Amino acid sequence: MTKKVERYECTGGGCPMAWEGATEDGTRFYIRYRHGWLTVRMHGSQTVLEKDIGSGADGVMSDEEMFGWVSGVLDFGRFA
Image (cartoon, rainbow, N blue to C red; front, side, top):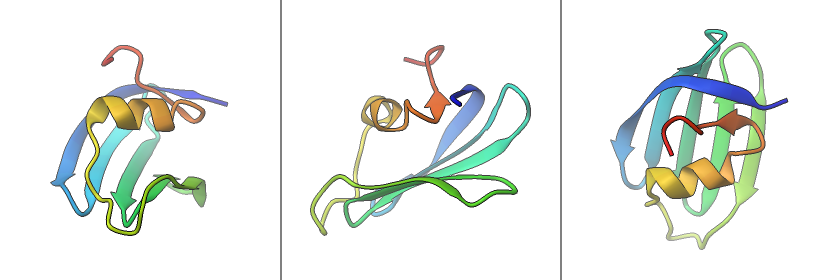
């Protein structure tokens, strides 16, 4: 089930990229992109998404790119 994002902020500027925020129901989340791996964790649960999407040297991604990769678990529609 995809959760709608209420708020988020970029908390890491590269190597790793990191974002934190909360969904409309108050669930906090953490997203990280480092060494080509994108990970999404929801507060109180295990990792909900983990993808190898780049090379081992990759660690930079725009917000818009991240929105697309995590769209199966988080809906950033109001920010896109």
